[in-house]
Image (cartoon, rainbow, N blue to C red; front, side, top):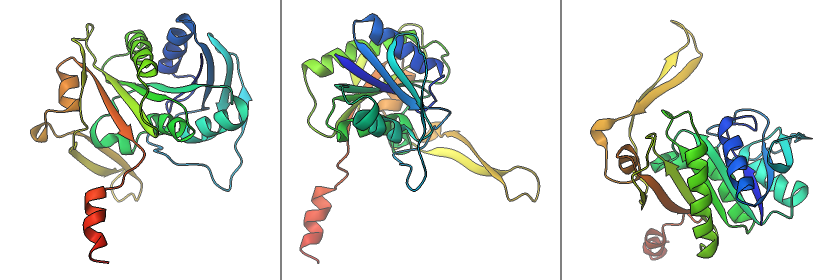
Length: 243
């Protein structure tokens, strides 16, 4: 099977190298289309009105690898339509940092996988808590979960979102829904009186729930199925009588 691997941390990030190594070592033919530099929090943005440049590079374990001057979604779309149309599935990651709760709305990692699903391929996103710098464990688990996904295919326009904890031994894999994360955050001026700001903050532990983020902090890997269709069918039907 031919797997297209992408990410949002950039093609030279250690997380994607671990993912390529794990899938190639499991007998998959690996193709890589990833951003040429950091594109975290790019969400599902596409490059419109500007040129995209793809540069082929050598990458251990990959049959082909391209560094692309666009967003994660650009990379997968360009890969599946032009550079690697033979790819049969898409895997994105391993991201440095979790993609849980409402953070999936900002995630370039999840967006890369979702673009794969939009293009009609089975797709999954893989992320790991920031506190752990070793990615091989998460990548090995990704192969196992991917094989379950291909044996039991998801419905169209769905993505399997896998998150791994920071502990040395994962307590297990659990299904979980997305938490509504709250942050204690602010925009900090670069200097007094400056109009240049940096967003800073962290999860508000006082407003924690018991879903994916909480399970991760307990040492479990979490799996959530997310979908492209964001329609609130109940509210839409209710408003139908009002319009």
